[in-house]
Image (cartoon, rainbow, N blue to C red):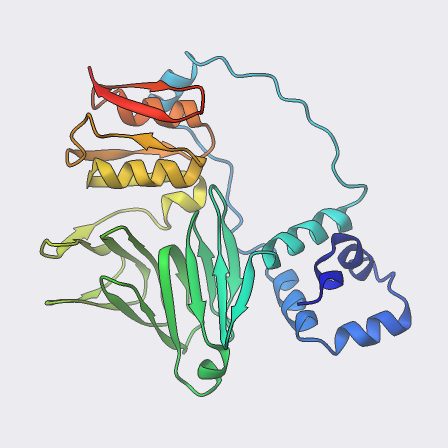
Length: 304
């Protein structure tokens, strides 16, 4: 992708229709123009409502002194703000041979529109790979490492493959998480077929499937209408602590030393993705785990 097409100044002028005629004509002939046009149409995709703290989190928050934050205007107009957003979205996808790779970093989310019009939102530290030419031939396969929330275009069909299992879909909404030996699928609408080693399941709304490497798969249930992380909250149900710690690291770009605690103890609950101190207390206080933060920012855990 040419650098000028990822520059927010160029994109802002395009959104404001301020491009010179020759610039506009040249831009509209590029593949980037098609991608940018589609992402602008989907700018409201996965727009999250205001986050509502749970009562337990509020109690903790009252004890935490919130530093005053200075707010300054970063862009001179709405068009520059939108342009910067588009540049960010397309600044973290790249090409390897014939594959398109979408990737997020710590604490980031990324909205993607697939070639068939289906929509995906990637959670922090996630990677999604696809071959657009194969999709055009009807071979619709995605490779996911991390977590993604899928909204499938009606009538479209594709397969999401992970190291621990695959998910086949037909007109549905579902969430897939695969990370470090942990595989979890939740169906929010329609049906999905999950295949993992010796396990196979058909999921309907409110049903899930969870598998930890080396263990048998497990059927799960839930009552939410969309993944909690889309709303700014990571949620777990009877999940080994080591996977909760990995999610904390992904959301806050931190390193946690957990060698002095039982990493296999189960955690049920949630933590906010918007305030590190509250998140740490929400996870560790119920488990009676103490933590210290070193000068480098590394967090060390110990049993109380």
